[in-house]
Length: 238
Image (cartoon, rainbow, N blue to C red; front, side, top):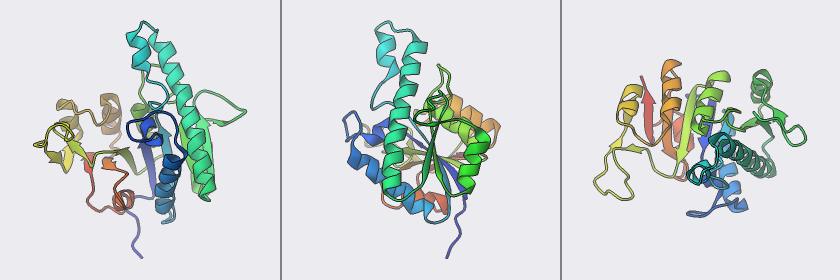
């Protein structure tokens, strides 16, 4: 039986992954789908931590555009990620995967506070850990939170799950001539100002030599291909 290339991964999900296509809110069927994707890879012995966004419930820029203070809008977004994390935890545990939610904003009645050493211990015991609450600070995206947590838990790779099969030089949904990149250096990703990943997250990964794989989680077997080192999506590295 082949051995996975990566033994511990950080999977970054957008909040929209929990909503029906084009919709908002949390759809239990979408949560169950994500849980099965995660379980299929965990069953190969891969340790998995997740960071999830909150865009399906709240987009801070909508409030900011109407005069809301950014710190307030961002804190609301962080709370939205906790709701998403709890929904995904429920779906994973119904699929038989023991899961812990840790949040950067303390909510002890419903989730553990984020403690790095405890998170690593959960992973070593075979539990999936979902990191919610972003970094706990405004002005940072959940992409950056994903990069930060990947470094802190000593992950082998950060996987950015999207509904596009990699990084393109233009939006492939609107431009049929868009070209997909199989590989990008961190500098290329920054210089081209590609929207697949936040520039702060890319910079953090570059400074700590953390490879990033951008893939379509909704393509069958894509996550398994990634953890086994098979060509899939776009890899951003040195």
